[in-house]
Image (cartoon, rainbow, N blue to C red; front, side, top):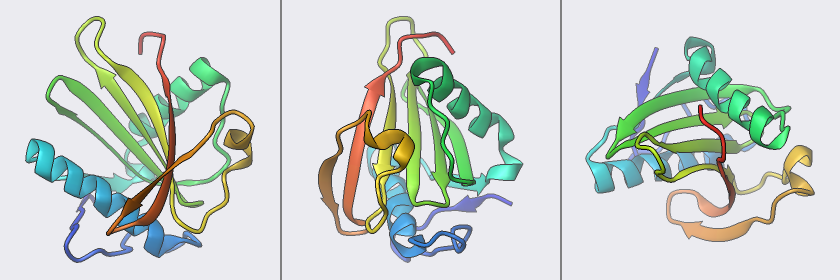
Length: 154
C-alpha cells in the first residue's frame, strides 16, 4: 500500500526495521518537502516488494554503471516524473537512500545520488569509491551525500 510522506508530522511508517528508522524517516520527509516546495508534487512511497520494477531499475543502473550491488534490504521505493525528469528513489534498511535523476530529453542531466541517514556507517560497497559531503536538515539532522553521472541509456 502506498504512503504519502508527511514532512510536517514525520513518521517511521514502513521503515520500522531500520536501526536508524527515525533518521531515515527524516531523510524521506526532507525529500518529500523538497518535491512539494519545488514541484508541488506529493512524494508517495510503496513497500519495495510492491515496486520491484523501481528497485530493479535502480539496481540495474548501479550494476551497469559502477558494478555496484547494495547489500542492504530495500524497504520502500517510488518513481515519478516532474519537470522532464524521471525520478526514482529506493530507501534501504541500513539508512541509505538512493535516487536516480534521469532527464527524459536527449542530452539531459542524468545522475545517481546517495544519501546516508544520520547515525549510519558508510556502506562497505560505497566507502572506497565515493566521498560524502555533509548537509544539515531540520528534518533529518546531518545528511551525508554523494553522486555520480550516468553515462548509459536506461
